[in-house]
Length: 274
Length: 316
Image (cartoon, rainbow over all chains, first blue to last red; front, side, top):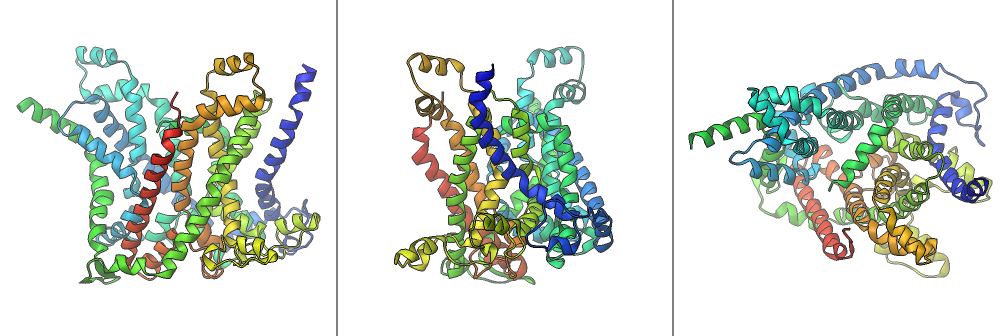
């Protein structure tokens, strides 16, 4: 036992050194966020702040509409999530369990759409949103993101693995297709639905390009866009910048710690699915 | 017949919510995009039909080519470095070591954090006068680097002292672009480690046992068992990370400049060029043409990777 442990030490040293490298930016963010502006600019820098200025985290809310950005992002994320779950569950069920004319054509169309990169449809999407009068409203941030083709695909694959007997039994008991969906499919697909939800929340929390383009006024901006503009305005106030960044990533880090296994397994599983 | 019609009606009723959204914000836009790219289309709308003039103009714009070259360098450095590092770490993590969960969390943290926050933090780390990185370099007596502010090419810096003068196309990624590359590797590493770990755990143990009985050492074990059986995973990561490399945008917007894409345009990648033309200069027809050309290049690259490399992939 002892010798086995001893042999593994070089591996641990390599992994730890790399690990410190991975963590250092986070450490630097957190400690800078607690420094005074003067101490942050000290060179050589201090690894442990002389005084812990927690008030930076309060000051930041006075300097920038951070609270507003948070509320916007949470609202957008929840609304888009409800939409994604609704559209994915219905579509995945139809793709997996129904036989009808045109099903396979539409499915292949969906998969093909997944391969078209954002820039190809961004310009006309902007124009459509403009015509609808949705630019600079929540609608532009939510409605186009209420469908996620990859989620439909994942859920379809999952529903296909459910035993056919269940569906036959439901049919014999006089259960209609919609009731079967709610009472059989959804309860049995909970892990996959959670996976989809986690993916979706992470994606909408972090999304930047789309909201940058479809929003103009500060009051509508989600967190990432507000943070990005803030970083341009206050480009030298490092403690405040780091405090804002810390707050912006904190909710996802918390989510990550709670659902770590789920998240990593989901990424690993879905990544390999081709 | 009637029954078939009814089945289709029910089926499409279930598909309708997804289909309507996709029609409005994907399918119709993609078709419209073709049309827009053929017009001189500004903020006020289409002014005149210009045929393929936008495409020809993109292809003759030196800034397009330099942004493509920047993207190319970015991908060429990020992708192999990421593959090598993530595979090494994944192999080390796969030895049933203690603290696997701890390490995995550590490496995975950057993946779930937003690119915006991460860019802000790294811009601070890269600060030439006050940044942590230059301080750490000063500890080992390396003179400070200008990081995001240095437009000089990497290859130029390496070969110039030897008396070799390189043409500007071969100057390599600027130090500023290299800074973005370093950050991107840090950010994407954890994702690839997790995918590699899953791939490694899928390799049946009996292959290793058989090879060990035949007297294979750990290097040959890797060379003859792990590497070939891992090729589907490696192939997947290669294709995905190439596509992701073409999507780099937020880093440039936040970390470089002003104006973004600087210094001297050496960090202006294709995605940023597209954004600038379409949504800052409002040349939407031109932007649509850029988008199609970039899409064809990525598509071509993906097909090329499949054609050339897929023969070497062993699907177990």
